Length: 76
Image 1 (cartoon, rainbow, N blue to C red):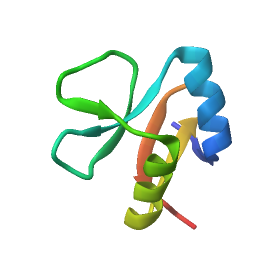
Image 2 (cartoon, one colour):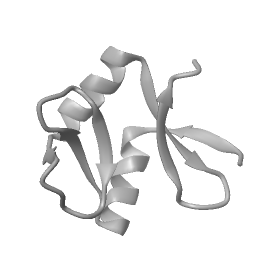
Image 3 (cartoon, rainbow, N blue to C red):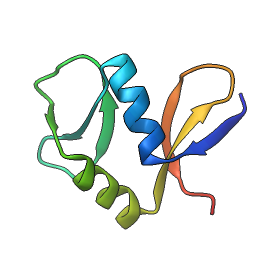
Image 4 (cartoon, rainbow, N blue to C red):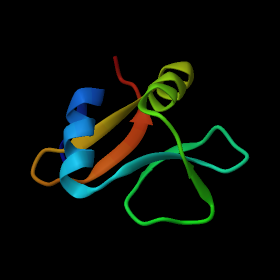
């Protein structure tokens, strides 16, 4: 599966389109993108999400031929 890094602006558009939320696993610094509510997660601001990605050297990638998203190590 071919994936490309996307910007936070692109992610925000997808989040609006698919009702996605950026969140953190409660009690940790692990960030995720979720659709369904879950007691294990707490919603965070886009600024906090981006800050954690930068701090950990991570980026959001999107599959070229679908809307599959994954947070992975930044390859830049």
